[in-house]
Length: 315
Image (cartoon, rainbow, N blue to C red; front, side, top):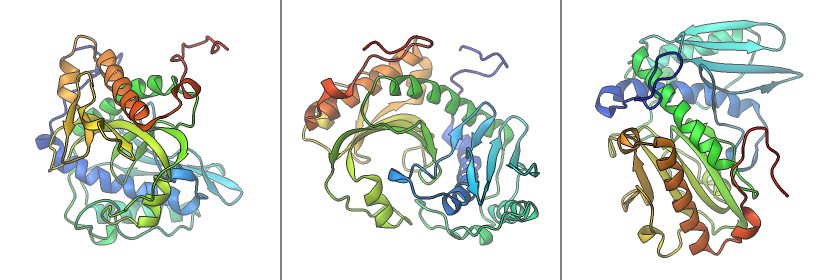
């Protein structure tokens, strides 16, 4: 397996059974931080104002507006600390160690208050079943540093490939960003046309949010570490709306999940491939092409060759 310069695996092993408790706790911690960004940032189309972003040491918010100043919050999965910084020069840290969601919530909100940041966030997690209010959640309290680091290293690999794939599109496309509600890294392409009203029904998420997110025809893909219903890390791809025949399209490496309504490429299959990056790009290319062709997108107007560093796109 290829090694990164720091000795970590480029495509690390991800075992849901081993990682489950840490990732469930971490999902709730990222929701607390993400909700700070949500509470302080003007609404941007498709909820693009709420995600976190993969960085050189973990996951971060990027700049959050704070009156006439800026605030940034980041999960450092190398030193295992939450870092908070403001444009006034103030800094604070919260240790990433085994502790309950309630404790993390209390420490994070106290750290923000200590910097003069007055913010109130939604009290309950989104997009999870049987959600426990953050301030009362003593159930989720596992944090294994090695597991968190491996998960971040997987995000680094997935981000690299998704970002390269994103360069091959001239139409409206999202950044490569991490949604803390669904706990996945995603990039979305749009046809430019309005979509049918989404039915909603996502657990603990206002239907108005879901309907705004899916207001336009989309082909979305990304990486997800799995859950109890599907205990495997995988790349995924889906379309909204779903055109007839999407589930039987030719997709290299892909497995159609009728239950989830999307194409999956298991992480372990990617790890075992001779060229993991190429396998993922093939999967992303085929699933997008199926969504676009079956949906009647104007591909000639929307696509371009993938970008090359330092080389302007040919006109």
